[in-house]
Length: 282
Ligand code: GUN
Image 1: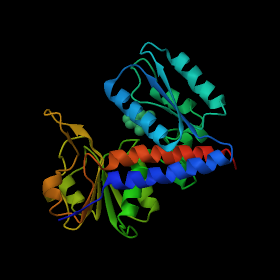
Image 2: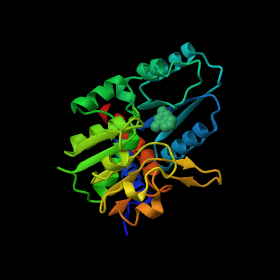
Image 3: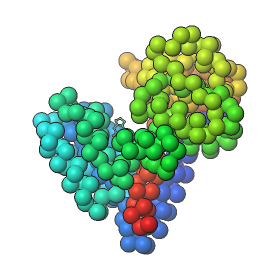
């Protein structure tokens, strides 16, 4: 039976560390501030943004949420982004995705000042991640790495397989795992014989967005399985990309859904915000 890597316990630890860091920054005259821009009324985005706001308040980080109507034009949104770039009291800035269809997401992300880009989505931060420079790594893969570290998983020389090649999770996850000395394979919808590739993994990361896609026959006995998926079933229940019950019989360690990676994504946003605030002191 696999050890369960709890996002709940680890996120609580990270948040208490963040709260201490906030105190220290405040004593130096800096109150870390995260600004989130939300355009329109996508229900899931609203829930995510409320969660981010709550997390900030819990840790003593100043939270500002700019809620803009769905009709906001791209130029208006860009003007808000630039105003936040200029505002020295804002340390972290993110624009919640997805944006309404009439807005070019890339153009908006590229307008965010890299030193405030706590999502790690701007080309400058992506480029820095690729070449191994100090950067803001995207929160979900950074959270996965934190879970592997906390679980004491030795990575050097191991085989890692990432299922999913998104810009937000799959690609940066592969870069972070490479930096941690694993040998990484990235799989996607066109991968041939996916199950056989997955079975080679000592560390298997599922970021597909399909409920219980990873079944027990795709997992090597003793592998560590990180489940990034958050899928809502017709019953309303949340489940991951991994068939948890069957895979936890085979894996040596596994992250649950809910209570796994999602909580770490939220926690890492706070860590990046503190780092952005700290850099203004240097
Ligand atoms: N939408 C879903 N996840 C995210 C995220 O991590 N950052 C932003 N900006 N939007 C999202």
